[in-house]
Length: 190
Image 1 (cartoon, one colour):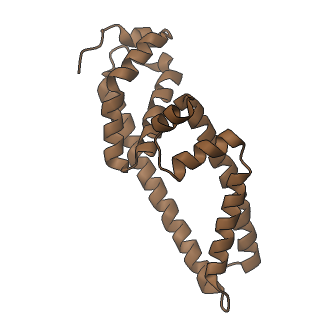
Image 2: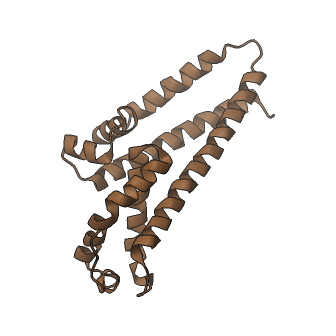
Image 3: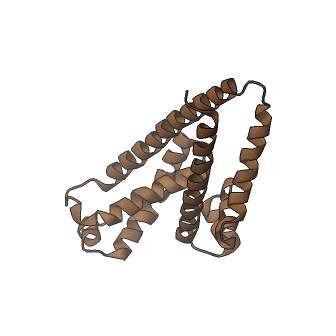
């Protein structure tokens, strides 16, 4: 890895986008590979690395002049990736536990019926997304394309892709949370 100029931190602190882009180009691949190794998912790894760079830019004024930028970025990406794994593991365990409790409470019911209803509801929510948002979301989540692959296919920026996926996830979470609340009230307290 080639050495970046010593003044690069000060340039970034001053809002120099070219200096920031130089850091991004220099370190992105190494950071992406680290995150992908932890997460085993290219799209999520890409999101984690992009988030670290976004935070770096948003907090550029707070950078210390003597910061070792690459170790700082490595640590940030590693921590975000492990936190993602931890948070999603805990969330999945909770969802699995709740589903098991729902199954146990439904005595003479066919649970598969509820699974099908949830899948139908999810598909309906996805179908109601704006066209481009829906297309980006499906390419990302159902065809497992990375942001770069979607960008090439649709000829839009990775930032636009990130915005579409974020919007889709907010809508889906909101709608599916409403469904979960309805099911909880319908089944009663535990």
